[in-house]
Image (tube, rainbow, N blue to C red; front, side, top):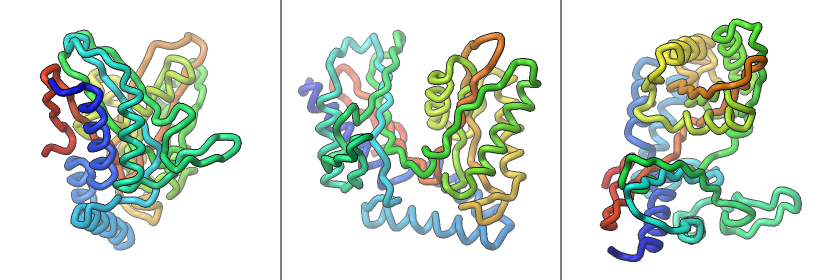
Length: 296
């Protein structure tokens, strides 16, 4: 097998480039479906502009949006792969190269001094989330150039358990979405993390955004029912594409849950804008790379 570090670096670079310049097919299909069913002329015009933007980005191999976000990576490490490596260095190399070549906007700064190295690398960035999977024989990497128009509208709410939990969760999500207006660039994917601790809830919400297939229900029927109710409620607000009015405020609502304290339930709410940038690949022990969201 070729050098694993080199394989990871090349794969991570490709994932960042593909995520920034081409939307996953399921996202494009959802936006096309929204355009075809949209009844508001203003909303329809907004969706048409989005579809044109996607087409132009693919044609000219350019970024879909000027805000290419900050580089996040979700790594699922299959223990049956037998692969061992500190992937931070190759991922940093990939991020530097993608920033220069794609190019990605130089967004990452020191949070206090605002120093900008111009590489999107430094002070813990790119940030890597790890999960171990004892049953798989590959490393799965998802690159997420996460824009901050949607990120900045994330919220953490604490709901006392004397409340009707489904009603309280729906009220919080609808209120937060209406308060956000057009800043998350709707139609969005809404990620919810319910339970755990505050940090767990927000982490679950972030992971929920990238569930695939888009709109697939949670395996717990209680959670799946809540997802659908919130999805319908958000699209009934009339907020619409870019908050200009219309039928499609969100493309999907994905929720994840975790056991929590008997007194209070944390609710993490986060958004992915219509430029739903993420790209996933799997690396196998023989060095084979399979691109999942953006097949070659």
